[in-house]
Amino acid sequence: MNLLEVKGLYKSYSGFQLHDITFSLPKGYIMGYIGQNGAGKTTTINLITQLSNADKGEVRIDGMTYAQNPISYKEMIGYVGDEFYFPKEFKLKDIRLIMTKFFSTFQVDKFNQLVEEWKLPEKKKIAEYSRGMKVKLMFASVLSRDTKLLILDEATNGLDPVVRNDVLKILQAYIEDGEKSILFSTHILSDLEQIADYIIFINEGKMQFKASKEELIDQYLLIKGAENEINQSLRSKLIGKINGDFGFEAIISADDATEFGSRFVYEKPSIDQIVLHIIKNGEMTYAGN
Ligand SMILES: Nc1ncnc2c1ncn2[C@@H]1O[C@H](COP(=O)(O)OP(=O)(O)OP(=O)(O)O)[C@@H](O)[C@H]1O
Image (cartoon, rainbow, N blue to C red; front, side, top):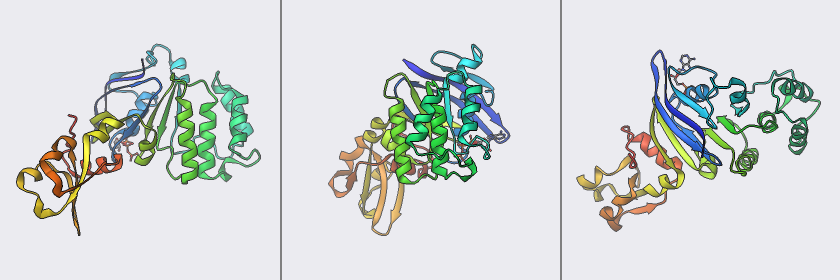
């Protein structure tokens, strides 16, 4: 059963078009939404959260469109971005008030429990919080509501490894009951390596690939070797070749490994390496297409 269904989304700005974004995210799973700066990630997220209207296309959360029931639709979404959205002069008591006023499902007990667990200071103004504290506060406020879809837009930016790890644990706990899902846009691909089930890669407003993380990693091999060992036929199979002092590095489709033979060194690539070489290739070759 899909929690999020995105069908044929289009949005045009001067000099940019988001083109036919279509995907679905099943309940209980985490999807990484990745792409270079300006690829259209935030634009897609804004269309899902209804911060802006699509030119064309449809979004359903748990089967419901925004038009069917705007309040229920918004209640289902928890959003954490890289910018803090509460006023900086607020203290925790003000956030309790505003959340209670705006969200019918806000549970103050749950909020207090998270705030205590994460040692967020009661008396300090938000302006005096560290970046990690602010991120945890945003998570505390969304996790205290009865949401079904958590949308993260660069939410783990600028966090130290310990806090980032805490946040990743929070995300894993969020989907544990198999009823909720997470759409996670980030440039920190090692985070996705750790927790994402599916990856979507967009470039210049168009989807380049969608695949499960395992599919993606199984599909490719990282290959290293000496330049003079590659003939014309092998060269055409290298994706995003990078030359270094000690030879070249690229990725290849795992199916091509036997043709390359034992003169080369092979490694299992990380998501980061796959994306880097695909981008380097320019033509966005994806073995799954
Ligand atoms: N409100 C807007 N008005 C005009 N152009 C916009 C607007 N919002 C986004 N754009 C343009 O849409 C394109 C995609 O922007 P978007 O913020 O979706 O990229 P992104 O993938 O989230 O990038 P980043 O990784 O840098 O955050 C950019 O060219 C941007 O200038």
